[in-house]
Image 1 (tube, helix red, strand yellow):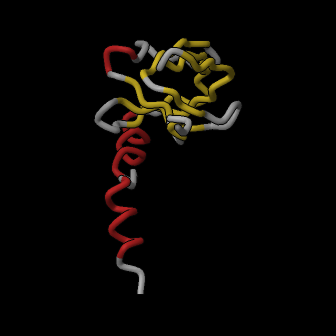
Image 2: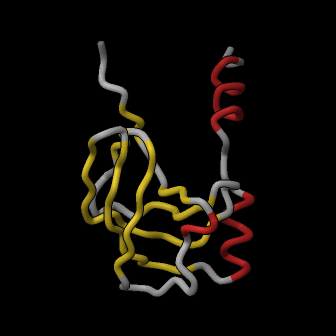
Length: 105
């Protein structure tokens, strides 16, 4: 039996769970199903379930247990419309990465 942890490089929330408006320096809470590992105090994208980018945040604390991960993040940059568009468009999916890695010569 192994540990069922998911290593996360961004904080991805359902759109309904994204605060409006997002404010730099404000603390927000999050809750995710499953056990997830996040880096603490490392900037990462805040994205919705469709991978749309909203800004950069840092997770300052989280707890894992009972098939859930709950924590607190702080916004450090809120994207304007143009920044959000570019950040969203430059996202590289797991499928794209797999395809490239599988075709290395």
